[in-house]
Image 1 (cartoon, rainbow, N blue to C red):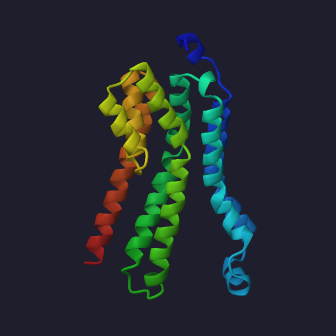
Image 2 (image 1 turned 45 degrees about the vertical axis):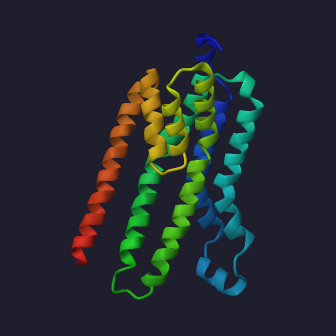
Length: 217
């Protein structure tokens, strides 16, 4: 596609925004449908109201995959990059907050509170799985961008291969996309600002872990 076509608005941008809204909304939806979680689990076990909201990111990820396949011949490399950037950049605060929750739950596992020995690992496992599913939801756009870049010979094949592998690892997926976006000189200002936010979040997470380890030593 031509450069002019790449600059035009594409309906898939809306789908990317909807995906971001869905990821941020599913925790609130879960609590709205399960106001008395403890009582429900004891009385009825796991119910559809407890499970279905948690599957929302996975379902939306499949929708993203289907949309990319259907629109493959009508979307440009740059538009795929923008879709991936919309999701990954918008979810940076979500993953920073999730990472802090996971770190706190893991550290509380070693606290004197006996129940946290059981609750901590469960919280870590649940948050990790949900975070991973949320991360994978943007993969169709990112991988589509990498494939199109390979076809158009925009980046070195080894760089694209590394980018494809990193799409399946927390934080590395966003950083690799930022590198490619800067290399293409696309989304430069938001990439720099959000990249700094991501680094600050990682530093805060590391400082928290070090502090808690020192406090319990």
